[in-house]
Image 1 (tube, rainbow, N blue to C red):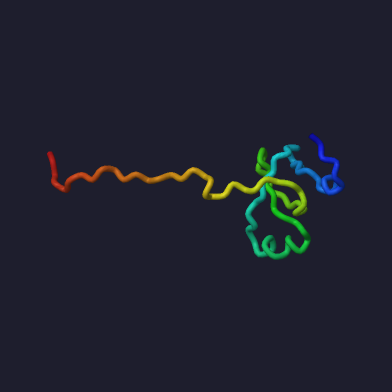
Image 2: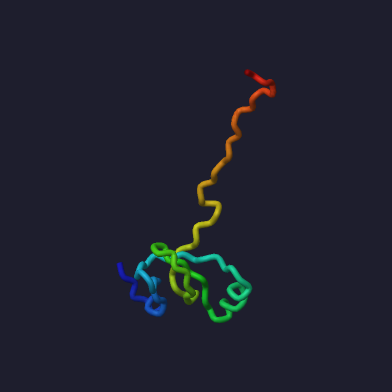
Length: 89
C-alpha cells in the first residue's frame, strides 16, 4: 500500500551504494567526530544488512534500529564438574 503524503516523498528510502540492498541498520557512533559533529550535519552512521558496508546517511532516511546486545543470544560458560584432589593411579 503506497502512502502519498508529502512528507513521505521527501524521505528517501535506504539503499546500499555497494550492493543495492534496502535493509539498513543504525550503527553505533564510534568516535568523537561521529558523536558530536555528524548530528550538526544531520547525519547518522548506517550499516547495510547484506554486505555490512558502513556509511553515513541523513537522519531522515528510514533504517531499522540496530540489534542491541540485549537481543543477542548470550553464551553461558558452564564449569566442568569438580573432581576430587586425590591422586588416582
